[in-house]
Length: 292
Image (cartoon, rainbow, N blue to C red; front, side, top):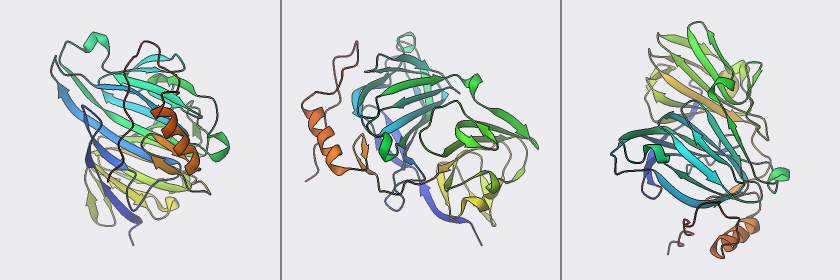
């Protein structure tokens, strides 16, 4: 019997001047452990007159995880952090009680042809950490645990698994793991996982119980302890998940909270522009109009 409970396909979504593939949330699966939002950016080639520009916008109650495969993004936020993220590194911004940030093509790339490809992820905070002070962390690619086993390459991007721990400062038990191979590989890693678990296929393909699954799909496991699959040559997959929260977390726009009234306050605060400002930025993303 297959261990796959649900298959989620990417859905094209606009984030201003840029299209992404939305994976989470999904109407039948709002979260996987503490992971509540995943966008697949690109791959896209941009001309010298095209740039990635997301003006200042707010967050509460979550941590953002940006992980690039190609290209670069300049991050600026209201804590004063300024950081250019490169492929393989992690930008981890904890919004807590409220943060504002912008994401743009770096100045040194704005007038040249460039590419962009990566993942943007939101991890909800546990209830007792939702109002923590905002903080930004950048973790270099060389700092992440990496190892090889039976011809397969592993990287622990965030959380704990396989007896290893990522330096990304997470707030609840979780894992986000990159797995790559060059030859056919059979993996049985359920004993290293816990809580809810899912597998995202970036490239190549995965087989499970006689079925083949292709890129741009998330496979939701029925039971993380039964995580067993085969990878076709030159595949890249991401295993993510962790312990779900006992209470429901709600999402409205860029806000995540276990308290709906807190989201309403964040809406009003953004409308009234009382969130902290991003140094050096003047514009902002307006609050979306409610659908009639």
